[in-house]
Amino acid sequence: MSKNLENFIDRFSSLRVAVVGDAVADQFLTGRIARVSREAPVFIMNHERTVTVPGGAGNVAANVASLGGHASILCLIGSDNNGRSLVSALSSAGVSTKGIVANEGETTVTKVRVIAGHQYASRQQVIRIDYLNDGPRSCIGHEELSARTIHALSEADAVVVSDYGYGTVSEELFSKIREMVDERSIPLTVDSRHKLSFFSGAVSATPNREEVAEIVGGDFTDDDCSALRERLSLQALLLTNGNHGMSLYQAGREPLRIPAYGPTEPVDVTGAGDTVIAAYTLALAVGASFEEAARLANICGGLAVMKRGTAAVPAHELLDAVRGIAGPNADAV
Image 1: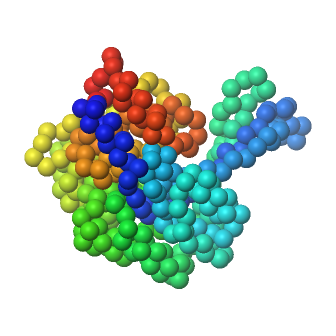
Image 2: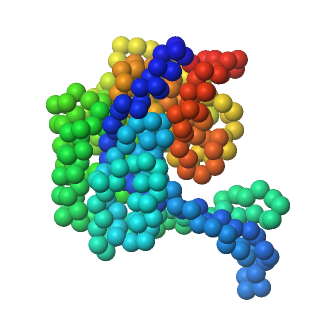
Image 3: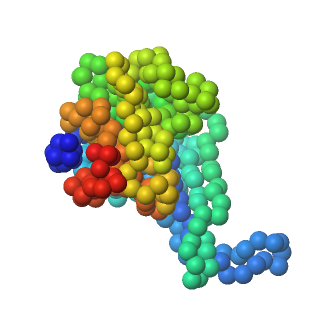
């Protein structure tokens, strides 16, 4: 199977993938712990740098581009400094930003992770500060996003809906997306933090255990997952299980267990699900079976969690990993 996976990766460069959803400005504020404050029992950190990278749907698009595909992002952001930084980061990652709609007076969803440590010690995240857009989304912004999405989908080879619960993908917009992908017979995949039940009719979805538990209950079984797949009218449901790998559910087949690729203790799980759906969708778009696409996505996710911060996996790293599978990781392929 490894040769098949290599061939799929080589063909990613021919694909155009539209990613529709909630883009997030992931900021990493790094510094060195200098001393304890006299004002309160807290550390004083000397700031060194702040870096903005694409998060949420933006990270999905960045991973598509890093893996060799032609990615476009369709999203709503604010016309603020964080929004401009996010657009710049997406452009630097090779993602087309023509589908981004910036709304006046709205806040770009931003997650600031403060990374600190002593001068000769390893740095670690000490706190995360979220800036959310709590108000209703602009109707004009949604109309413009819908128009840009329709244009992008007319040229796309696959579509990803990445919903983090920040209001970008309405039920009306998702209905239009479904109509277009059905007309053009291209794959549509979905990853939703809290509203997976609203996004039925895609080819496949990639929820994690917490997201499935939110729908069917905490102590769920394989039968529950199979029933959820049917309820959502999916051809396949790919359940991500953290360091326990993945489980694939298809109609008329027994559940497939895929062990985790790489070390079981990740360095950083930030954005790993975005990497998984990017690789999974690309593989499906070049004709991989659900099993082949899941195994490739599993390896890609394993590479992502060994990187610090919100990271994209390059095609050459994935290709090297597939070629080098042996020993304890042989079952991953």
